[in-house]
Length: 424
Image (cartoon, rainbow, N blue to C red; front, side):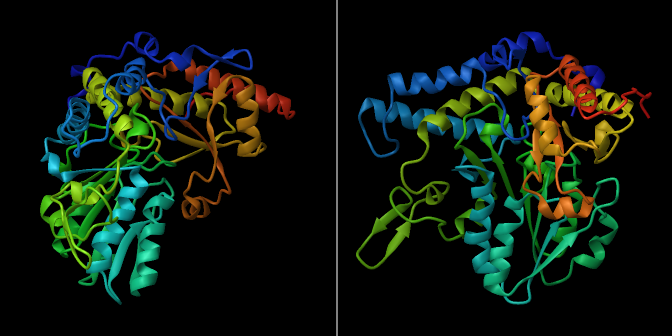
């Protein structure tokens, strides 16, 4: 990654003009969208790419030999090549399109896990995982009689890596870790964990849903065996996920779904499988949204992921400073913006997170409230729910200032004698 001084600053006002939805008003106020960890807004280029596909070359892929089918197939496979380049220049055959990161993680647990994890084997996760990286492994452990273990976190919201040597054993078969926590914002040292996993002969799986959209990611540098992420969290349409897998692993795995396109030959009582990645893409895929995802990748490449990361570090630092200045807000996760992504989970001790989100909506501010599909982490934090503001390349300091002003107004509504404290 380039140092901050070498990275050009984002022209946020110019970028905002590319996102039609940011022109709308909510309850008569300008939209302040701070929920990008849930899904990002889409630039005009992505919206147009989706429309262009349906208007000009809508057809099923891989099977037809007419012009529309060939054009659709090329556009679909071009997106695969762009994804492969985006995460470090891997082989396109290592890229599988899924519906979302959740499906990618389930694919690994089912197609790899069911054939390699047995009774008494161990699966190592963390306390901060999203349910998508917990439940598939729970199902596998229950079916196979395997043992689930979890890397604990510190009170500051970082992984206790000093526990790794005690948690990993010769029975460890899978280590699956989020790259960036969707609640704490913590950026995890995946390469260090991968090195430890591989010393024990374990598989390294990474949930990249909150990492790939915000950080320059090179799967070779991470040394992971699988990486799952979602297109809709990085300016693309919903319904498109990506699973990267080492080709040698994918080639030896059984299919996840059976049906059309994933076969080479079928007889009444047996079948052989297509080459990777198509072995894992049964049936007609989400062609239109995959094609439009190509425009999202182009957009991010043009902006530069180093610039996206530098912008979020600056904005997160400012957000931490402003929220802490209120004095009564509790913030979860590391205080150093260089150690976290653009996610700030917080609580007002006098206002439930759901009520706070409802009030902020009246000011045109969209945040998330709830357990964020991370209930075990919420229990570890001692919180039933949190409010969560999350940033992306179209946010700026004015958005954070609007959030803080609305938090002050919400406190006054509930009778708080508001006084802003210095940051600290």
